[in-house]
Image (cartoon, rainbow, N blue to C red):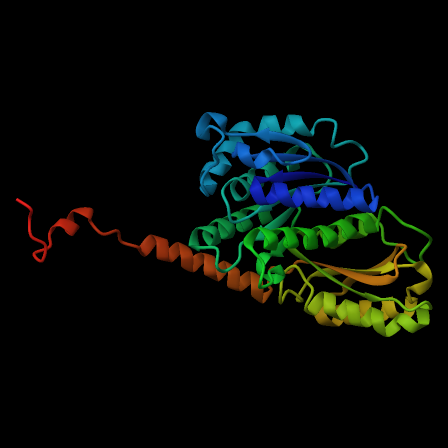
Amino acid sequence: MKTVLIGLGQAGGKLTAALQSFDERMGFGAVLGAVGVNTAKADLTQLPFETVLIGQDRVNGHGVGGDNELGAEVMQADKTEVLSALDGRVTAEAESIFIVAGLGGGSGSGGAPVLAKELQRIYDIPVYVLGILPGEDEGAMYQVNAGRSLKTVARESDAVLLVDNDAFRSSGESMSEGFDAINEAIARRVGLLLASGEATEGVGESVVDSSEVINTLRAGGIAALGYASAEAAPKAEENINAVMSIVRRAVLTGTSLPDASDADSALVVVAGKPDSIPRKGVERARRWVEEETGSLQVRGGDFPLQSDRLAALVLMGGVERSERVESFMERAREAIDEAENETREDPSEMWQNDKIDDLI
């Protein structure tokens, strides 16, 4: 599934760089090009692809300070510059466009819905958003931003592939190490998904192509991506239980959005050497995903890849009814209510204190 990436904001730019790097390192060729877009000049300097600084007349390259309304206004005003940077990248070869953005900040969460709407108007290929949810401890402003952005961008894009930071965070890491590790984990999953219908090494029995990814996301709304891997035995018949195990783990513990197994559609991809992928195991795993998700639209196939391991990718579309999304949106609503009900103390009252004597 050949795609063009647009990294919006700080988080979006870094994840886009990780995705492009993974694709180049693996030699897949699924990423046709990438562009970084931000209101903060400093966040663009380290990105290894063309960048566009927007909002210079409003914020002078210093960012929007988490104000996603301002981020949306800036993108609306400067969208032509972003579209110009895409010229020559979105070719006839491109099968999709991915906007990559953190949904909790200002530039990414504000700009993503505006840009998705504009791209939908111009291009005939699907426009997806790879959106990153802020962690529960990242503050009320980020929850509100993400709630508003998610609600809007799900309407304006063909689908939102959602990533929950809390699902990947591990203890004992610094913040920068944590985010780097998260980006690498996401890049591996999404990179393999994009490549599964593109770069094949050998001939599988039922190879996945990009149309199956597109059809799985066709219903729109929110999607999640699960991943798990294990050592492969030499013969396919020895790997039936291994395939079942990694598919279950991908859905139940390895998904980008925890507790998101209630889906409208799904795609099960098993990657590995063709001789080690058991057809019976893939079909059995596909039926299990049908039961687990409650969907009758579950596709399955192989991704021939020269590796000593087997990997399972499970893409689930229409997971907006999941507990994680519902609890997140409820938290965002609570944060909005708290902000609206908060009453600021009158600063002049601090001087009306009889226990403190005047100096003169």
